[in-house]
Image (cartoon, rainbow, N blue to C red; front, side, top):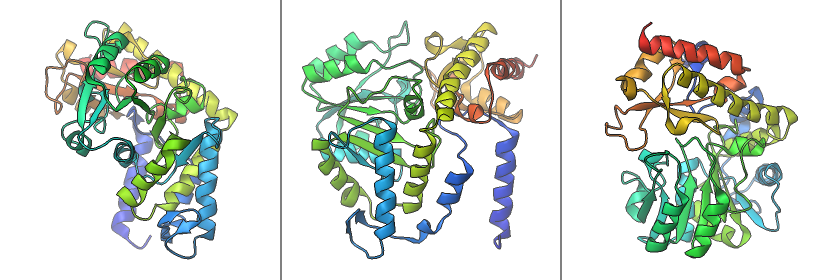
Length: 386
């Protein structure tokens, strides 16, 4: 590489990624094929519009790439093209969610979703997000005692507030979501149901987590977490909603799509159809359960008592260590996590009461349950300095 400074930084980051134990729940390691496609000549092409309806010439091959990605997305999640539409152009998860809201919910109307401090996402209507400024959000959380979703309480809130759209999905909730109950609640208040499966999409693809598709009207997902693809996003929607969503993505929010990303997503989607990926997805959950169980044995409180997915929250403040301090102590010893609020946290989000732990990346590296036991012991030694 002629640019020696960037070349040196790439090498340093490569070394860092190889040397650490990566427990960031929203990170993973892509294949060499995905990396190769991201740096391919598709980077050079501008393709404003959709297949067959571009605003630029020279897009015959690009159209094939985008259609291939769309077809693979439907195939992976066993969806009928007659019933479901798919958009692979969103640059990332946040604009994908924003596009859905813009397409389907009038500005200032009510949307209901899980609050960020309880395990939701910024784009589920947090006040600092554009989504929180443009719509009136009604938030639900988890039960204070069980730290689980309380569907009776969600129903009461929905009946009282009558939202146009109910959004479910998480960044820091470790348990299985009951999509059937949410569908029933949405029907009772005549709301659309959107599932943001960004964190658990790869688990769904691999049969390690229930599918939201039998119950949802819209499903959004990033592609870089458990799905193990590039930084990008996909919107699935019932056919009758797809045209409005497509218009919200382009020209509503974006110009030309990142064709290299779309091609890399297509590669990742094909990889996710393999038998090896299904084993991988199931191993992610096994590893998360093993790690959380071992940490609990060592005296650490795990939020909700465990996990059914790839992540969990650990209450460090229960042993008088803030989340920020825990993150920093672990990073110094080569274990990467992120500080995170826990339900009903009384501390600042910048120095909260817990950490979030995920197992997708270490599972990609081939680690199994026995390795999780060792990692738990190491985390405990570092945080207790014993």
